[in-house]
Image 1: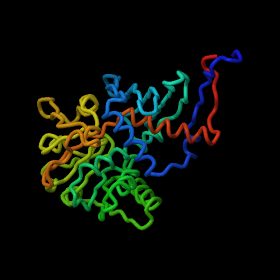
Image 2: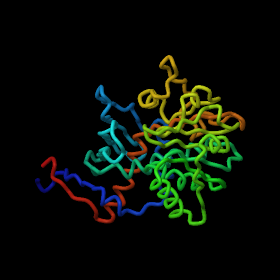
Image 3: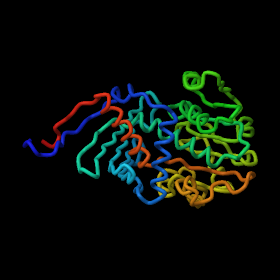
Image 4: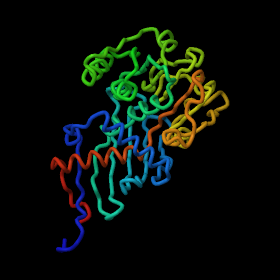
Length: 331
């Protein structure tokens, strides 16, 4: 490299590099909210994800390109999961995020995106709940105890501190214990109630976040939901009726929902039309909840601009701490 040539070395941030970085739930929420607002005002781009899935369904791959106009950053995210026909312990999952500075034209970092995804998704669910839950919401139910289920309640309580009754439904004892432990880590004075009767719990819940895996037997029906309930779908745990019989449907992205939400289609293979997208609700450009009584279905499919914003935040923290390995990939 000549003396005045730009530094095209790529900083690689591993799982362990990112694991050691300290970031608060409030910081994550603010970062994710800022990304959604930038998308709503038109300064960011979030194209529909590309999907590849073999005929037997044993794996699935996604590719997502986006641009954060607020940070002037372009990024590509890839996601690959193998073993969907097997148990959780036999599955393999890899996801990466590569960031480029759109002002200098230089690479910022390439990183494992698993921690970023594990944080941004429950953060978006919490923002959905903050904006769409009934004003008097006091109870919440989380379905599933995987990574998303474990972080759902801490983010939810951060966004809606007025919640009083916290419930979780799951089939894995170690997962249920992890949900309780994660909540206590962030909120030592809060308790979570493990429920065995899903229908009874759903009938009591003002907010339901379904994060379970594809093999879950859980399927909350629309008829179980109380007046004014908000049902948020992240993974599985809600029956298609909660979408099709909802009074109002909000999606983080209708295009993404049409790609990843096909399991919620009706008998004719159709999805319910989305009333509005969440970034517009967040900025006040579109209405979210229009009455205290309506039952709302919200689809959280994830937005790559939130990965970009949070990934860039992590890259800044890592650089400040001197973490990562520089690779002369283009030299």
